Image 1: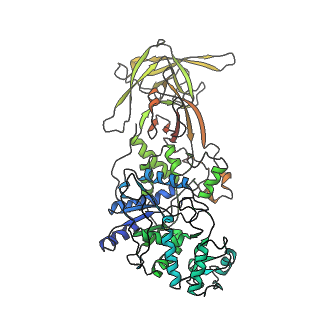
Image 2: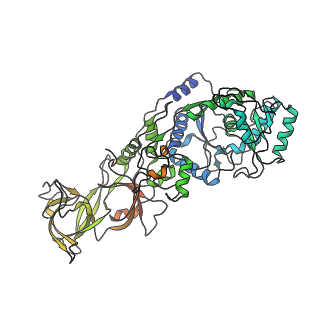
Image 3: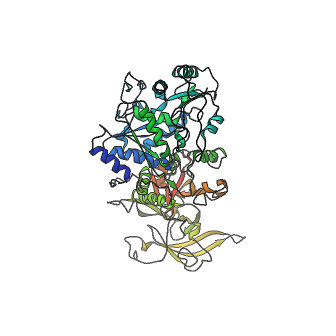
Length: 591
């Protein structure tokens, strides 16, 4: 059985934490509230883990909360399936580490409403989790966001535009060319209110009209050139139902959702730097009571040999290159969990990478080292043979067993042992025997000796072959006096190999996973499909020691000399054991 490493991790230091600490010292906020706001249009991946750990980490360190909020303003791409998977992934990643910081909306609570002074009726942040709680949804704020849009119209800061999407883009200009005003920019407040009400009532088809902010069409920042606030989409919403046919744009909804939840620090990736002035403009244009949330940006996590684009991952799923979003070769959190990667290893990895303001590709070996480091400490050792070949120990009688002791985890403070049986017939790895060995081959060979780990030294005496010359039996002598505690236990040989009893071993399907791509940056390829690793999955029929018959989902084991493995929680069942290789013992990709 394995448990997560509970060794205290030093509190990280970075520029965002310095900002938060300064705000705490200055008493700028009554409470530190962060948020993790994924769009439910796909599964979370390891890149999201950096944002999760940063947001929840800061809340944990400052005694605050981090809200899990679904920024679900685009009904064309969002699904309840993704909400469920994201919620599961977040809870798994922070369980036992910062789950007490997870902010939830009380189930059945009314969405925030706007009072006469523009302040939300209820503060939705820092509601403690409970059995009857649920995440936050931007779609729960649709009434409030709509009311804020009307307020912007009344203040002369928003207008209804009749330009088509193509025309809107043409009027926007280019980075080196100013945009030009929409011919509908100077409509009266009364006309804009009437048209927006008719948009909301469903009077116009998709794309016929939009609500835009009135900022500056000549701004060098393209995001300030009268960006859209609302668009018409006659599509039912998976969470809000069929009430709406106008939906807010992300940049508009995001900052106001932060405000409604009492978020103090809104942490985004670097591509949102040019969006920050719009974030501030919306909040300041409404004259909202302070304190207002502030946006800060940091570099994304981009590991090598992976693809993090949801669009590209979806293509892999749809073209059956992988077996779903939770395929263990994918960098999705559900795929990593299924593969057996501990949440603590992911947290250690993203914390070690740090928080910076420059984009770079992180060597995937850094992640793999974090996984090995975690599992080396926590995973119990077991014996398994992936590609078996049978050995007959001729001086052990049929039905006879020789008791041996194996160590469960040499890394434990007080290592324990378990009983394993040496029998007349055992399995070893095919690669651990060579009839014609290469130079410096220290495993089993004709006339050679090796030690069976935890048992004794054996000597290869004879090869039995069939008429075609294929080896049918390898006959050896077991030197039983070389067992631990026996007179010749200190006898030295150069090779030690693993094994299992042929009569007591259990059968299992073992899936040997490897990197999905052969190049460090597959996304930079003309077609990333050409960079797929044809050896990313090998399935073998293995022989395992009988104690693994009771292995449970979530447990990790080191198959000695082979790697770290865990039960596949999806395909393994009673009578059909399926193990996934989480990672090899050493980096087989190192030059």
